Image (cartoon, rainbow, N blue to C red; front, side, top):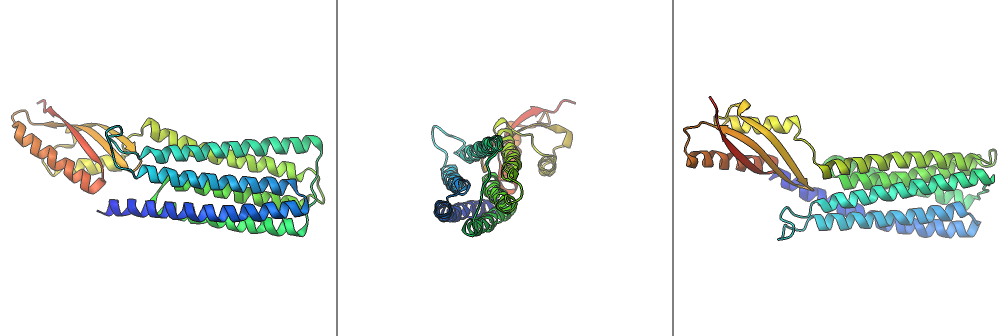
Length: 293
């Protein structure tokens, strides 16, 4: 019951974060675009479109979570939970595109010896963007700590990447009066940070797609449950876990006495599977083997 409550809380927090992010990003986009047009800053106009791309990522979050909550059907017997992983991967790819864009733009500016002169309006709008985007990132990171959601973590890093890039742009606005190349160098550093965040997000999502081993704590909990039914620890082996978002499928092998009836073995396995379902929220399939003496 506690696990299911946490899952409902996870969905609620993720959807709330995505909706707030969409509204905030659209408002920031309009503000940056207006300020960039007024002061004639190409950098600020480009940053505005970068912010708008974050709204796309939040829409991906909404889509991923909504699809992941759909129940199992004939074509998808294990549910649609991996839609969240697909959405997380999409955000990771978006971050890669953003990082590459920053690298390319920074290189072109350094090659061309291009400098930027910013006014008070551009500085104020950029400062507002830093505060808002970091606020969204903090909200997503804290929500992720409460419910542990990969897609929340991915979106949090996307918000932070925009906050960092805006902060770098803000620093560049002040230092550009002394160093013409500062804007390009800061762009490179921001691109590397965003690229690293994208790498971690994509790597973790791929690990889940490929399948991860059952962690030691879960194995020990399963062994403790089985021991209550007279099963020795060494008789439990061959663990495999399959993740479909919030839906988990677990299989393992269990050795039972050779002279035990099929009916008794069935009752023991049924009780063990129910305990694991209630306490670990995993659908379990147990393969019974004879206990070799």
